[in-house]
Length: 222
Length: 311
Image (cartoon, rainbow over all chains, first blue to last red; front, top):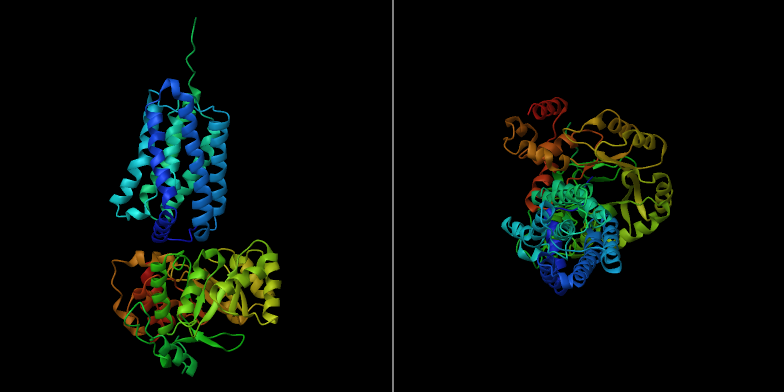
């Protein structure tokens, strides 16, 4: 598999994308903070509303990235981008269906390993990933922002899904898992080691989500 | 084998001089080629001669909308033409490369000396004509010198389209391409049976499978040969980054590794043009330096292979 663009071109295009869509990029990045906060500090009386807010935010970001990032920006550079864009749009629809329409996802960090890893991944996507890119010398204007760019958004999403109290549909991990493959191959072809973290994060999240389903759930006795 | 050196036409002399013209972005242009001693090759079907080093655009010219990067590629292209370049090869598969080429050509007064080469790349044979028209619009030219079927995708359908385009004067030559050593069997069958003018495949100092069949067959069938991946995607440089050029490279007027790799390729009698890709002016100068001076003879070619394989 070959990529028809270089790392230089990708980040130059990211800078142009961020500039062209600045209000949307800023809004997406800023709204990630209350989304994470509502998951970090759930309030039982507002759990339903908070979960729908988070689900709506995630759905909107996947739809946006599918349309503007993949079908918009990347489709000019990469002949595979339209396919990726459709996948991202599909994931946005799934998140909206599961989280908004059915309301079956209860976001909130639960005690234990999945909760801790989920929280860590959420923070990684939100803060640590862009900080690493800055430390690597990338221009701040080209930084992929959570909610507006695929890699940090994918990590952020699986982190939130992993840490939910109830078990979110594994179907919601399918597209992120496919993206893990894309990110890993891109990391190799573009020689951009930090992006292996995207693949690792998603695979770890899915593995823990599956393991969590294999454990028997505790039942109440009366 | 010594390269054929031809006194070039007035057109090429003028195009080299035109390459020295100043632009708003940089104060000084690149030094001009020496057209009188430049290595050119004859296109077998017509006898037309083209410079033996061209330019590929895979990745390097896919810079999207960035004005800064387009200006940088403009300088690469200006250097290319000033140093005697002719063939530019691209494809719809290469993202915005064709658009960027057109952007640069427009600012270069369409690059006198240009030998335009692109491809059709669609699994739907019915889309070939529209893809060719779109490419012409992107490049800002009326006719392509060479239209190729990229990676043999749906070649039977596209070949009919290309033959028709040739009859109508929309393209001058037609051909097929492959790369990475793949599908050589199918390529050979097409070379044997079909009325094409050019073939393009991978050939470099480490990937020499084409010597066994495709190169001799191209010569026998009087097909022009365009060589892609002359530097194996850059890995030949990575292999040798700490190694000095061998002293005996001076025997064929070689001053750097790019010329070492390119002169090996050009010294094969069946090769018409190699198309290295670069995004750097300095690398373009090195590449185009392979158009000057002597080429290695047979024994020297063997010595070069032994040297590289021994590393």
